[in-house]
Image 1 (cartoon, helix red, strand yellow):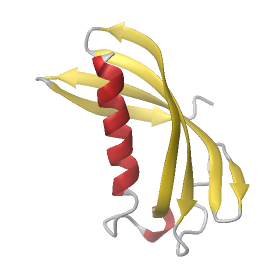
Image 2 (cartoon, helix red, strand yellow; image 1 turned 90 degrees about the vertical axis):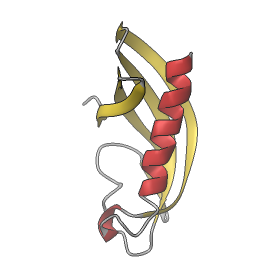
Image 3 (cartoon, rainbow, N blue to C red; image 1 turned 180 degrees about the vertical axis):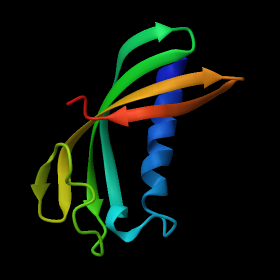
Image 4 (tube, rainbow, N blue to C red; image 1 turned 45 degrees about the horizontal axis):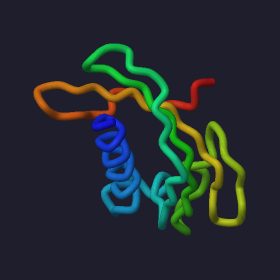
Length: 103
């Protein structure tokens, strides 16, 4: 389950980054909550797919950046978002190589 731990950290880092001012305003978030990360498939020893469910609270300056794909709008929050992540292990590090809704 080591990859799952790294995936959780990678995805949390991704969401934390979107709380920063380094991100364009329409993609910025104020807060997030990760509900669960599911281990979907180990394609090979260096490539795994995971899915996760989470919610984000949009930054007041953000318009629609987090609405695309899926999720339920609840005021300034988008709940029940779902993404599929592909994680690659290379040279002792893990990185997200792709993510999407699967639709």
